[in-house]
Image (cartoon, rainbow, N blue to C red; front, side, top):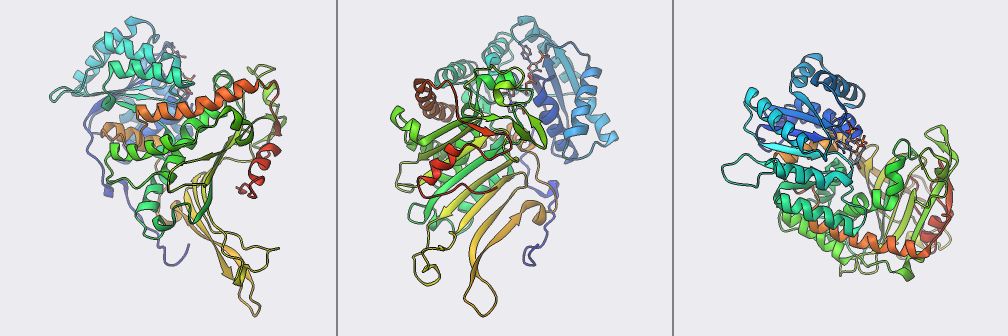
Length: 514
Ligand SMILES: NC(=O)c1ccc[n+]([C@@H]2O[C@H](COP(=O)([O-])OP(=O)(O)OC[C@H]3O[C@@H](n4cnc5c(N)ncnc54)[C@H](OP(=O)(O)O)[C@@H]3O)[C@@H](O)[C@H]2O)c1
């Protein structure tokens, strides 16, 4: 750790925490993977950090029949395995008493009647005011039926000055193209007011992603050079080490473009490229991001072949274990043309970013899990220390790492000590865990607290969801018209297909090694 960056210990209770009112969180899909691995552990950590309201209840909902006790035991396992902080028996006991389960299908009107009477009982017993958050941790095909079920049961109360609040959290993906996203938004938007709807993209809850605005707008050195005059290009990478695993049926309907680019990568791009918002008001920030989506140059049928690459992994090794090629995975169609890798080049057509390419790439079965935004600055003139055209100086790069460890580094060129005028690139490195003496909260902790506090800044607004689908749907249509029966392949455990290397090398650039 550098001597001028002393370790700073900030306890959660020292943070400025927004006030949160007592509430009931209803998780549709309470028996599912996301609830067990992420949502319940996130709530438990909020409890340990003293951030939950003084009284609260959590009701899980699913078709599977379970008692409250069975539900508590099932999610306890998830906390033991996935919680950021270890399970403490006394705290768990208190937390578990506030977990309940209701079984029923999303399409069955009786489910909503049972949910309503159970919620009212629980709220009476725990002296809760009836504020409710409905978390749709279910397949997107069920989003509209749940909204309609809530509406018919009188559970979707509109905002009012003296009524308890009702809020709804919608998991990604919101649809699978523009038309389906609009259909979901139409129903959710009829049943709930936009101010009640929180469309989650958990990337927006990650510390480094939140820090991006701070880096840009709380430091005087970056903003003056954050434009086409000084920036050569931007690379955004989200790599996953595992293959399709147990999510075959979902992935066959999605693919990397829908699963990762439409939401996570485009949201990161918006944060890098947006104009300074005039305040931190959620809608002001979201307007600034929305402008970026509006400025994205559409990828036409003619362009799609030149600026996008899609591919599938072939047999290889993922996380040290052999995996079959994508088409041979369980549950995958043997002729599938679903992409497990995408790389693309795009442009934000405004004054600030004129001519600056943004290279995006994401894939499964890559060498390791990593997410990074790298802003590469322009080369210095070829004089003085850069006079040798055969050995150009490496450019400055500001890299913001989102995972696995969160932090940022700035590459600069330095003199090598000695008598010869030799230079070498060095990294100025900052890691969150080194400086702020505790691990960052998980994204879902931050985001669940945001919903309780009615802060929508880190959630996707309806117009942004539809704008990003508009852009993505054009690529999907271009791909469809290409009619490929085979996609290029890359061996599992490598950094993607040669076609992706060519995409960037044709511009005289290279992908960063992560
Ligand atoms: N897992 C992740 O890491 C992750 C990450 C980002 C987004 N997501 C999104 O989050 C959502 C949930 O993902 P997941 O991984 O938890 O899926 P999952 O493990 O398949 O769980 C789905 C849940 O939905 C319930 N469900 C499905 N159909 C239902 C119906 N007709 N009526 C009542 N309950 C129904 C299931 O309960 P029963 O089987 O008991 O009916 C189960 O609890 C999906 O939209 C997914 O795309 C997941």
